[in-house]
Length: 319
Image (cartoon, rainbow, N blue to C red):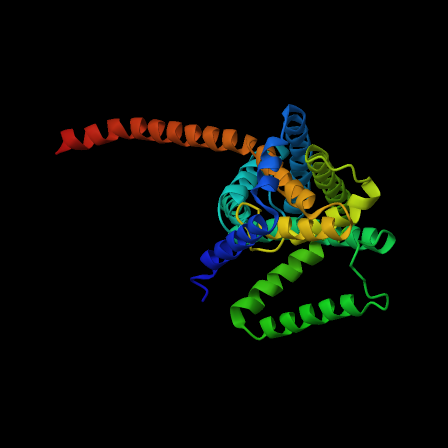
C-alpha cells in the first residue's frame, strides 16, 4: 500500500477536480484562468517575495539556534527552489526534503539539518492553527460549530499523545524522538521563539493577502470579515497531502464554503483556481535559482576536470 500511496493521492486529487468540473462546469475553471491579469501577477510576485523572505528568516533562526550555519541569502534561494519543487512535483514536500538534506550535508549534520526544517515548518503550522482558531472563534464560518468545551482540542492532543507513546516503543523512532525533543528544548529560548512566532504570523498574513487578491481577481465582492474564516480554513485544508500541485481539496472546500456563505460555489472554485495559479507564479523565481545552481555545478565540474588533466597526463608519461 505504501508503494501505491503517492499515485493514489494523485488519483484522489484528480477525482476531486473532475467531480468539481462535472458539478460546477468547466466555465468556473476557465473563468479562473481568464481572471488573472497583470496586477494580480505583480501582486503575487511581491507577496511571494515577502513571504519567502519571512519564511527563510524563520529557517535561519531555527538552524542557527540548533548550531548550524545558514545565511539569509542562501536560505531565500533554497526556499524559493523548494517552493517551486513543491508546486510542480507530487507529494508537495519534496522541495523541503531536498533543502533539509542539502543543508544538512553542507553543515556536516544531515539529521540536524532535517530537524531544523521540520521545526521551521512545524512552527509555521502551529501559528497558522492558532490564528485559525482565533479567527473562527470570533468570526465563525457558516456551517462550522467549534466545540466550546474544548472537546475537539482534547481529542487532537490525545491522538498526538497516543502516537508518541506508540512511536516510543519502536527503536529507530525512539532515537529520532530523543534527538528531536532535545533540539526542540533548545529552541525554547526567549531569543528564538518570539521571533519565530512573529515571522510565522507575518507569513500567514501574506498568505491571506494572496487569497484576497485571488478572490478579487475572481470577481468576488465579499468583505474581509466574510472571507477571513474561509481563508484560514482553506490554508489548513491545503496541508492535506492529497493534491496535484496544490489543487484538489482546496478547491472542493472553497466551493462548499463559498456556497454555505451565500457567495456561490462556482465563485469559490474559481477563487481556488486563481489562488493556485498565483501561488505557482509566486514560486517562479525558484526556476532562476535552479538554473543558476545548475550553471554553478557545471562550472565546478569543468574546473575539476581541467585540474585533473595534468595529473592524468603525468600518469600517462610515467607508464
